[in-house]
Image (cartoon, rainbow over the protein chains, first blue to last red):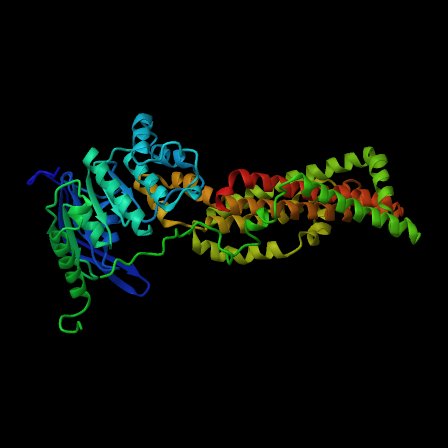
Amino acid sequence: MQPPEGTATKLAVRNATKVYHTASGDLLALDRCSLEVATNEVVSIVGPSGCGKTTLLWSMSGLHHLSAGDILLDGTPVTGPRPEIGIVFQEANLLPWRNLDANIAFPFEIKRQQPDPAWIDHLLHRVGLDGFGGKFPRELSGGMQQRAAIVRALALKPSVLLMDEPFGALDTFTREEMNRLVEEIWLDTPTTIVFITHNIEEAIFLSDKVVVLSPRPGRVASEYRVPLPRPRSFEVMASREVFDLTNAIKGEIMGQRVPRGAAA
Amino acid sequence: MSSQDAIPEFRQSHRADANEVGVTNLSALTAGPGISSWVEVLAIIAVAVVVIGSIELSLWYFAVPHYIMPRPSLVGVALVTEFPLILPHLGHTLVQLGCGFAIGATVGLVLAAVITQFPFAEKIIAPYILILVTTPMLALIPLLILRFGFGYEPRIIAVALASGPMVMINAATGFRRVDSAKIALARSYGASTLQIFWKIRAPMALPMILVGLMVGAIFGLLTTVGAEMVGGGFGLGNRLTTYSSMIKMPEFFAVVLILSILGILIYTIFFLIGKKWASWET
């Protein structure tokens, strides 16, 4: 299932610029960064470390304020946290003093809303966590913690899911398993997903579009469409097409890091 | 670019750092092996019997006089026979400790919660708190007695002054443990400052708060007994001076025993609370 081309823009970033004021002077993290995410599209943002990927995502979520430029969600500017946005953070970011059920109930407590138990049970079952509601985060593996974090983000039925290097701390096998899970959930309940990663294979597997950011200050260097059928099987991912795409993106990031000519 | 996989391990940023400033950390509360079987219980009892028995025997064998060191059996007898007379004094001590600690702990907790929100104010106040922590509040007792007489007031004030700063310094360490990712999580759902305090900062500080309360209560007990020894006609500390002046050593040691039990009770209460509400940290 491919998102139909030419659908409405869900999330638009226009000339996003972010300056951090630090003790050692101003730091330009994002410089006139522009990109568009269509409704129910999965877009990955890759780039070298410290290129402003997380800054961009936190700005999209309304947690950070841009110094210049704007971010439009459904055509209206994002100036603070919005209920239609769900975030999955680096590492699971579960609250260690709450068990799984209480962690998933946390957003509802903050918003003073009644949770939808049927939907939450469905999600827990979907990610294979049924029966773990009474467990505390420390009793779960890293992968299970991150599944719980995904359930927590989806429990509020967001129309946009922002994922900030969610699987960066997981081992390769768990990471691939989580990638397949994200794809399955997306096929079940189409959502607009923005996915930050430094793993190119992961970005290609998940995305309809991969956006490459330049080194700091972050700027959109280029965009690659990933016209592969879903679900993306092992065979598809082992294809020549994916291999070439991976190398193109890798080359671009490497080229940015090492000035042309200086590369051995 | 290689796929820079981070070490597959979760950063436990909420964990109490071993180097964290504070009188102690939670490991003091929960360290030590638990008792896992009846064999261990029997062994512990057997050792206690041997230790107390050999003290009893050697005091008897060397014919040590009562007024130097009473035999454990005499202390036990004194504890039973004198208990009705000691009981009202125990009551006074508990009332003073309870009131003083309640006042000190409340003020300490509120101050810690407020002051940690303003780092600059914290820097200004810190030296005074340190002076309060390090100065034995017993030193103020004669002054307080001059002003308030021999009743409850000077003792309660001294206990509050002794336990409050202890609670505050530890609780402040807890409240200072900011985890920006968890606060961002709450903010992403539109949490207010108050919600962030009650749902993120307070639970995160809880283990350190419990440590502070425990240390504060123990310091409070210390100060209560000390204050009672200085002046006034009631309280367990007063019994200590009375019995020793009358060379009633078995009774004296019976009071010491009661005081140790009080201290252990304080520790156990906070240990159990910590186990129930702050076990996520260990």
